[in-house]
Image (tube, rainbow, N blue to C red):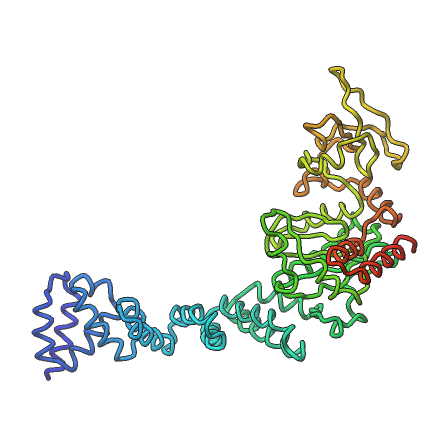
Length: 457
């Protein structure tokens, strides 16, 4: 009968306006200790905001402890955050995680990430069973470790397993990654495991520029793969003699982009190390997607930030063919391109007139014909003694990549530049220069020879 009375009194207390005091709680706990303590402990855990209003901190910990001892995961979590001693905190945090509390599992995974990676992996795996983001983290961790596994296929199987788990938890990103992997198998260096027979992502018959994409993360691989597919179906680019190899995966530690980009906004990676890894691969140019930094073209290597859009990639690819930005250049680039009168693939640079009105120059003979053959002022050489002129009145993708158009004339000029290989600077130049800087004359000579073979082909 006493347990029944205790239950009734507790229910009345929880339904009241909350003005009962600790003394009355203590009285009932003594009269109906077993039943009351258990139910009150459960009430503390299940309705903490109501109960804590009437409890001092010491009483709160007392009742939380009772609930925690009855394996209430939320009480165990709250107790771990209330207690001062590290051992007690760790004990209750562990208990909460074992009882399936997601935030406890995620915290343990984060806590052990550096000191005990295997333990961190265990708790992340437990969290992944109920959380899509944790499953995605595991997919990425397994992706990063594939180069360290004897068989890449086994590592990739782990990636797809956790992507499937994330997909079951409703992750649209996981579904997209799985579809891409099914369509095109990722390739991980060393090259001995890079199956050249199936490595071509997009190769038209006439291929004067062969681009090898390089990525590190799963997200980067997915993004570049999508860009290649978009390039392949972009009708305005069908006449460009450009092809893409399938992306290869090289770890961030090997690329060392952070180290080489220090104190610089522009992305730059270890090109000497990259040359060693890519030497057996057939390519002329390279696209590297890095975690962060400013997109740029360095001779035959295009660097992209992983957040850069497809349109940014197109704009930068055009730089491979010598097309110049039609927005105001930085001081350093202006010194390179706005220092003399010259005809560039998409710009005519002339000396500014001393008169008030600048006379519009004639259409350059070096350019292919246009419908009206009119020139229009470009902002490329603003704040220099030179004026740039462009063949298009509106905004082209070389001036405003996000909203600019891709006029047919530009596409024709782009293709014409690529078809004359002596106009191009392939990645062989990057690798020859980096080898020379390292004092590696043998490698430098080999890369210079590949450059000569390329432009004379």
